[in-house]
Structure formats: C-alpha cells, structure tokens
Length: 524
Image: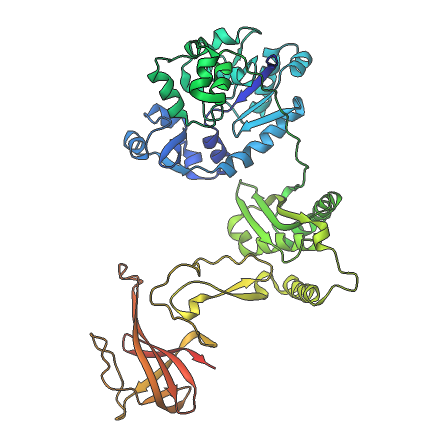
C-alpha cells in the first residue's frame, strides 16, 4: 500500500443552503435572512445557521424541523444546482492552486505539497485559499491538511469558526482519528453498506471509535465485512492511500458581456452581443461542437434576473443567438428590468458534434430551406410569429391544441400520456374550432332539446341550426357526461357530449353545457 499523500481539503459547511442563496439573491428569504433548510426525502440534509439556532438539525424529519422552527423556509434538494454553483468556485481555487479534485459539491481536495511550497507552508496556503474565497463572498469555509484526503476532511470538520484551519502533522493521522466516532465512515468509504447500517453494526460489536476499529485484526475484518471493510479499517488507522485526482478543467464555452452604464433598448443590447455571439459560436467550432440548446441569462442593474433555455431545430449560429437575446428582452424585459440591463451571459445547455450538422454534398435539402425561411420570418416579426401545433393533454379539444414557437422545445402544461377521464377517444374531429360555436338543437316540434338530471333528453334531436343554416339530423349518439374540477366552485365544469350526423352527411361533435349547445368540432 502506498504512503498517504499530504492533502489539503476545503469543506464548505451547509453548501446546499449556500448554493440556493447564491442563485436566489433577490428572494425574500435571502433578503430577510430567514431560517432555511434543504430537504431530501423529507429529511434535513443542510440548514442555515439561523435555523440551527432554533433547533433544526441535519437528519431531522420535516415535521420535527418545522415544529422546532415554524418560520422555516423549506427548499427541495437539487444536486444539479449545488454542482452548478460550486463549479465557478472551484475554477477560482484553480487560479491560485491548480489540481483540484471535486469530491462532491461543497467538498474539494488538492495536493498540499505544491501550494505549501509556494505560499510558505501548509497552514499559510490554506489561509490564502480561505481569503480568496472570502473575496468572492463565500464565508465560513474550513480547511484541513493531513495525510490523505479522508484524514484532511475530518481535520476540516474538526475546526472552529475562530480557527478555520487544522493541520495534522505528518505521521499523526492515526492518533488524530482515534477518538472520532465510527459514524464518520460514510457510504463512499463503504459502498456496500449504508451509513447507519455500517456504523450501527460496529456499535453492536462494541466498536464505537475509529481507534477501536483500527485495533481489530485485518483478517477478522475481512471475514466479517469483506474488502470494503478492509478499506475502512485502513482509513481508520490513518492509512489513506487514495491519491488526489485533479479534474481536467472544462473549456470555457460561455460568454459574458457587461454594460456600463446599463442599457434599456433591446436593439442596443443586441448590437452589444454580436461580438460575444460570434466568439461563442467560434469557440464551440474550435472543439468541433455546435450548440443545440442555449441558456440566456439577463442581469439587471438592481440584481434582477431573467433566465431561459432556448431550443434550436438545428444548431445556433451567431445571428440566432442574438435573436434569442432580443426575443427574451421583448417577452418581459420592460417589466423585469426597470433600471436597464447590466449584463448578459450566454452558455450552451446542450451541445452536439459538428459532424452531425454538416451540410450535405449536393445541397442543403428541403428541411433546411424551410428552417431558414421560417427563421427569417421570426427575425422580422418576432419570436411568436411562427408556431407549430403540438397535441397536449386535456378533456376539451381546444385546450389540447398547443401552439409552440418555431424552434422551441415542445413543453406542455398538460401531459398527453396521463389519463383524462371523459376525454374524447380516437378518431378525433379533423376540424376543431378555437372557440366552440354557438348552435341550436331542436326537436321535431321546434322546441330546444335539453338534458335532464338523469342524463335523459327532453326529446330526440331533430334539427341542427349551425352557421345560419338549418339541417335535419339523421343520426345521433350520446350523451356522454364530462365532469371537471368538481371540488372548485369557480373552475368546475359539467357538460354532455353528442355526436350528430346531419342530412348532408356532415358529422358534428357538440357539447351541451348549462342549457347551451355549442359545436366543438366537425368530422370532415
């Protein structure tokens, strides 16, 4: 087994809370300093200092945490958010000490030898990193230096606010770890066991500290726990042989433009984005990539933010990037950015190999010509000037027609795959009226037909008056009741559907609601 490597670990306590606050700087919870807790599976995974002062603890159930702190702000765990906010922090650390390994969001490690030589010692290097992070507005970070990343992490967790750096001298890892409880052996160390199961089993065997675990014979540990147990045994003894594996920094694909003073006109902002858009597309091209999904972030002079992901049928070029910035401003810029836009950030949400989007040898083809024509219309008339229909979910035909702007992702609020009791089965009418048309259905005597409480017609339908014409009804079927949102008096709907064929052979889909007849569609 290799000798442990001197490692420096930076630990960011309650990082999920910090990540949320850094992304939600304009929220009421962030401004007021309200107690915050992040929950996963109804258990607290992280909480703010103000929440901890009121009795909230990691591992608490949600109801217990809210009972201890009624003002608690409940936030759902989001691992993607944690890593997204942590990535630029790691990039800043790499500027002063390259070779950083991300253990997980909120915890990173690096070899201590290089920074210690450059900054004059291990403790000095750690203090320089903490000072750099404080300049970025990140406080409360702890640092630990020891033999191996595991011992260094425990050293960081053993620090205090007034002394945020702990250095364990070389060769003293075992003595430092000896009094610690076995619960510090987490699931990443013993992947075949859950945290509570492994520590609980050791406790039932009478082993409560790492020192007591390290004194056990290796052969006995292997017989009982297998190789994961042997690995944990070596860590408990201070023999962490894992090397720090620095990450390969990802290429800088995003581009940012700052406006000083802030700009208020969309044309000015779009003009200022042209060079950045060209550089953005060129940078992706240098890596043989194209952007298929673009994230545009607009930052206002007072911290307002507007963020959206745009989808492209093919791939974004520079003009398409500028168009998306303009469209995002047009859709709500005046309402959000009252004091002007101070900056714009564009970044690829999804990329694809450029070879998949290369033009054909004998021309672009019909699809690409159509796309260019529709894109030109969009650029001249606006984002929502060209739409394509998408079928969504619902009980009424009009609400199932969802117009999606050309190039956008087809996202519907009502999923088509879900069950919709009372919805019309196939085949559907070929013509659907955007607004159901008012019609009259009468019996042979000319009296209006109605539906009784027991869904019994007052008389058989005989005539249909639609579009100013009176038609004789040859056949009809129904009624089929539709009941929607019966629990909400304001949005509740109750109606009956009918299918009717007139004397001209035209088939109609009618609804009778509150005594009124309307045509929802026609079978052409």
